[in-house]
Image 1: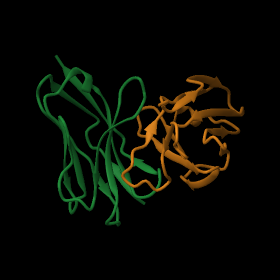
Image 2: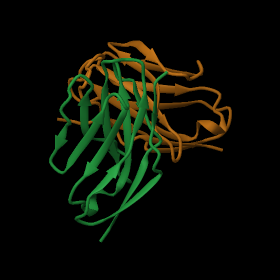
Image 3: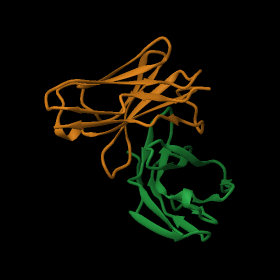
Image 4: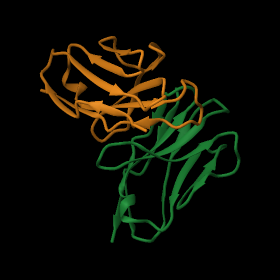
Length: 113
Length: 115
């Protein structure tokens, strides 16, 4: 069974600084998708960024980028120029088929002004 | 475009009771999935519905059941509630059951407390 591990229960970053959230996963598949979701106090999961495993190029979305290391099964999220609105719980997730996402336990990100 | 809406937002039940949670999928989305998120944990996949048929199930007992209606809205039913069923229940919809990298759109969830 696939598993997703987020080893940082909580992280803090100063406003305008850069922070990296870690994620590792375990799968025997070669074709899959990886995601980072943000869950603010409003509880609604919001997609931050996605990565197709067959693509070697790391995904970027504005201030958000990933470091995807397929051989190491690592998928970290870098947030540049952190803003107060980035404070939330961040989940790393794996997906092979359908709507079944396998989530990690999450990392709470606190942004200090 | 209407997003995913869930009801009720909060509810309290006692052990042994039954509960029904409802979800309206985003306009045009034919696939709905349900997740259970215990406090301080990541969501866990319960099951998925595609065109009114269950189309994948996670490691949850049969007392967790669901329905999808012709308009693609969905219900999650939980019978014989246990204390451990206390959680946030999230509904997500998408355009297709195998949308690969396609985005899932989540609702804000229903917070269930079992006393």
